Figure (cartoon, rainbow, N blue to C red):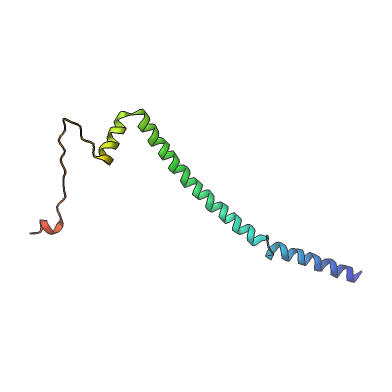
Length: 97
């Protein structure tokens, strides 16, 4: 009976070793949980970016002013009856003389 008890304890210890330290054990589980957390954070930032892009698309579809503003800022749109002025800031070296 004593040998049987020792064998059972040895088997239980071997199984516990595999659970805690073996392949596909607790260390792998921790790594997978960390990876899932990183992926969820990346998904959140991408969802926020998608929401901003969707709002921008809605603005462009619904308001002609938004299209004109974007064309002015990004493409330099000037209407036929407008005058374009470009203001260039002075350098600090030039203002000192």
